[in-house]
Length: 216
Image 1 (cartoon, rainbow, N blue to C red):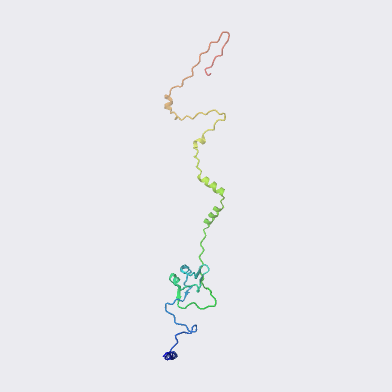
Image 2 (tube, rainbow, N blue to C red):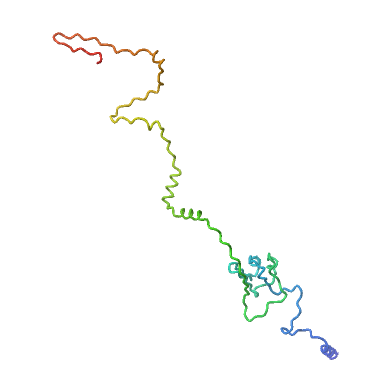
């Protein structure tokens, strides 16, 4: 009985296709949802680095200044996180697996990034900054003390016109602050008292005393 089953299976294989494939000469058709390797459309890529942030295997590198996008296909785990995180949809997942190679190497794509326009420098701001740097600590301290100093009260103009003090040290009389008298007031004012004349003293016997003048 076993011989009949074996002969039947042998005869059937002669007229039907084999169950295996002659890989790598023959490749099997891939499934529609097969995850093979990452492909980047470098023209649509803006090198923002979002794919690098979400990659769990650290298989991606982005150098925005140099304009390079690099992937290590042998470290990639085909999770498709970078495909979903790309804001420009430049990344896609191909069904074919990474091609066979004798050496594991990274794949780098280059893109010429436009240079940023230089900002117009403000000469006044630069000069002020340079002047601030050139100020010494002593000058800075002097400027702060001058800013915090209490200003002196201005001297009245009348004091400047006052006569200079006598060098002999005699006290000067205070100016009369009374208002000037009008002619009517002068006429009604009391006459000044005359200085009383002292009586002449009688000389002693045998002597004569000089007479005193009224103006003494």
